[in-house]
Length: 568
Image (tube, rainbow, N blue to C red; front, side, top):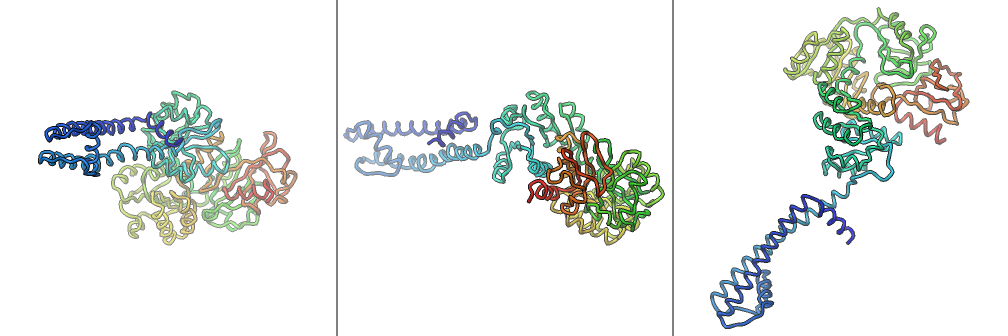
């Protein structure tokens, strides 16, 4: 009874239920009028036949005949009476047996079930919830972001205005709130004034409406919006968003930064304090075939090698690794130190041939623009003539067709290209093209985008040297804003961790800790009393109360916590 009462209380305030209930009440009123009219006619005909019955008997006879029960204890003797009985019987079958059940189910029972479903999904956050993150859609970025938020024990809620999607998310264990995204009440119930951040990740038009709605009730809450079209960035900023992220444009630019072309050069990918984290491809440089300890980059330039990419996998440094043509060093140093390395390597790794870009949608176009800006020649392959026309101002040559056509891809320069950038939106196609391009050119550097994280390993096995997804870049950007850090994009699944040194490690040297060997994490710096130390060695001591800065993925961090924090 308590449940039914709560359902009815909800529906009495629900506009759709009121509409349904009015229809049902109107039908019941019509049915009541028909029963009264039949009862009156019953008395008239019975009077003509010389029979006298009470009004109760008239209603009794009408209901028994209409419901087809027909007990037969009261009958007409005349043909007129029997014809009237047939009329009452047929109309009763139609009104009571057919229309009434349909009206009841359609205008009461189904809405009652909908009420149960709607009430299943919460509409407000638990009491005293604060410092949580609100997300306006459970898209690919949100899925990746929420996994990272779980690891950091940060509360979050997804706001969904589609009931079916909200129910699915709820059943899947996603913390979800049901409500309209352009309704202030939705965000009030989400305790937006106590939230840490709001991620608005709908389409550009709805984003603007949501931003304006939120700003009316929470002028100071940080708002991060995802922009699909670069032209909408200014609109969303002017509407009140603190950060507008053109993630597809950034993805194209990040991928373009990972290609090999012209001479060897360090490419900054992030920053920690006043130090730059950069990648340094060593293809065709004197560093190839040397051990890490033999490079002497620290002695010559003051930079530290904190990691090494080998065919898409970031490896921790022990000093014994042998570098290959495919190796990409992850180094850390200041701007002047990186500039000095670039000067030394300027004459190496020269390949004047154009980079091959396959797929020139939004991501591909951004990559082509970035490469063109840096003076790098680009040849493009795309099936869509309109897309080819749009990207042509930034390209050396444009080829319309499919990249699986050997003659076409050969004319586009696959056999001599220093790098191939795969930017189609289909993971299966990118995996196929990675394998195909690797077979055609064993030395080419292959950089690719993906959509689903589960495809990272397979595309790396197919031959990709570097992989990055829209979801990873978007979630990394949002997390960086939430933490107040600069965006560092290392690659698919890898990130920068800043962790207080556990008691179990305090006082140990890096060699004694075995962090790299046991977890795979690369220690890049130690921060103590606002002082950052990056010139680390095996003998560097991990001091009490300091922070350790490491590169790695979530699994590596789990191992670190399991071994050094939880003591398992």
